[in-house]
Image (tube, rainbow, N blue to C red; front, top):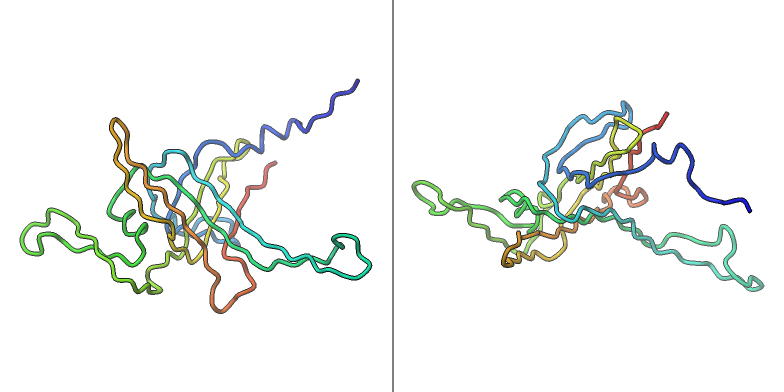
Length: 196
């Protein structure tokens, strides 16, 4: 009996491998296929990162149709998010993790010993990051796969947990937002390298 499987010699060229890295402010130019702004590395992760596109569909119902009809569905809601588990933490990461927070020097006079974080409840446009990118390795390419989210806000809870004999991991959930002047273009892009 013949065996059936999906493996081909191209399979080994199209594997996304390892954990990748998360960058803030990375800019990919689609016209040239190059990174024009490398962005700032968010930090080391533990447990990797996950990109999700959430979609809700409405099935249009018609008399006489006994089930879904091709062309009779529409997207009624879409969202994109990137979840990452940050083990390498910094004041910059904390400011991303707590939208609207600001840092001041403590003590306020003399040599600063601490960053004092405080927040008001009002969010401003400046609290959104222009982009967050997950950059990963593709087994058959010297170019990475890049997943970009635009107009991003970290909207997960800020939880700093300390456990005996373990390192604290900050779980961040970045959500992309539609541009006010373009409500039809989803605020994400995936750049996958051409594999020869």
